[in-house]
Image (spheres, rainbow, N blue to C red):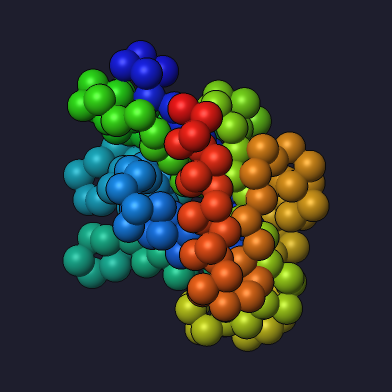
Length: 202
């Protein structure tokens, strides 16, 4: 990217701990552009995506006009065609916002940044970056984390995991893999080791 910025994609299935790993990189001075945060920004009331979602699924709009993300998730994860329709509304806007953020980081002189997104491999966008980090965890760990975080039953959590591309397929195209199935200290050590590799090759 212009300005000498090296950008790595960061991805992982639901419940693997991609956000945890992202926070570890941020704590070490590596900026992370988070597609999940951008996804929330592009659907706030007044944004074009909000209006399109409200027209398509009026039942997910609350009294304060914000989108009930849990209700929307229940709808889209139950039907791949519906999920694809939502992605067609939000993904181009998320991508444009991400490009703006990365350009700003390049202009500010940062040498390294991460772009964190759940669907980098599914969309083929992992090829747009200088490498891909995939965060992994066992399915049992994913189910437990998703259930605890989102208040879902094991069956609901398993359905959301099954709706995504298998982790093995993501690992197949990864440049680097971070195993986040153990404790945080082990993950911190893996992040430190990877960061040393990235900065020594910069």
